[in-house]
Image (cartoon, rainbow, N blue to C red):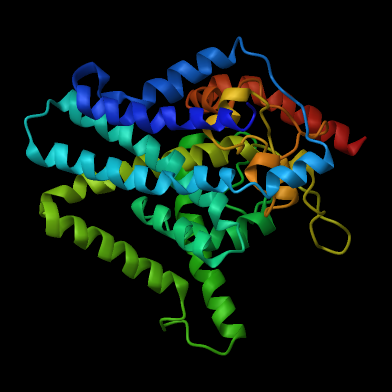
Length: 349
């Protein structure tokens, strides 16, 4: 049964299809599941801090069932995008329906699009990496593949990482910093890699150039089917997906900082440098992203075997509920800043 629970994650994209089909008030589809249904249930459902035994962990790591659960999200997302673009291109929708469907589909771009791409992007298999890049292309955020793997994981919980929020930083300003800072860093990382290899930055060897071309080709493909009028909708769902990702980035490392050692280097990343949530529903719907400390401890560890650490700071509510709280900065600061201060105080003791 523990293996089957991840099938619940498909409720989100199914609700997105339903939102487009039903229209009207139901147009928001997946938004109701992600930001009403899940946060409400997580207030009453128990948490789970259980870890697997080493033997069971090895068995689950090798079980390809968990991989296929990820792979299936690719045709689901592509079909959902086609359904959305086809529906809005036909016309006859109210403003409420257009807004609702865009947020509805944008949320899925952020979850089974960027989030699943995040999981696959850490795999060593080249085919799985290509799957990750395909998913990121739908969000027009392919630079994430470069910046997250080679920038964020190196600089997490320091001021060098635009995706690590400072104490007292508003989420709305963080969005801008992380979005543009991450894109800038991706170009810098690729330029540095090619310089070490003795290659020109302005060549097809540059992943950022290839990713930019892929995104242009994706948009051109949409235009060839639905005309230029489809571009605002493609940008809308991509932006909503991106902001969902950046909201997750915001809550994952808010206020947590690694100390700088006498050598000038930062201390190694530890479980205390990521906020975690053991709320079961959020863990299932986000493929265990909420056990974020273990992901940073070993990025190649598969989602189904990520572990709970006692020393990891815990969010007061699950990831969806935390995002809602973060959108109201005074409430978020009042809840989180005392915890950040206590963590810092304990680290200095």
